[in-house]
Image 1 (cartoon, rainbow, N blue to C red):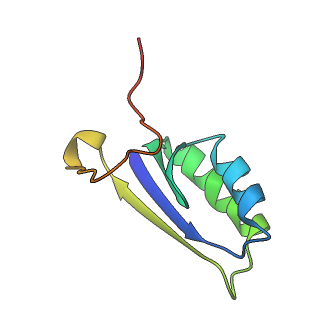
Image 2 (cartoon, rainbow, N blue to C red; image 1 turned 30 degrees about the vertical axis):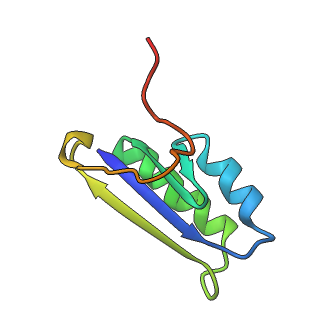
Length: 87
């Protein structure tokens, strides 16, 4: 499945959350990650984020689609971190 994950966490937790998410997803913009995951990887992310965030003040949004081909992504301005693979 293809996942877009967006977070809004306290500034003190941003480095830990960002470092954790980079193990699974591609960083595309401040507080935004995306990429292909297996269901088991998504569960690992959910569990890990629960350990890192404060559910009373922070928020995580996870958008899932079956395949990246179903996303019509438009980028306006500068692309921060291209996710195209180089072969």
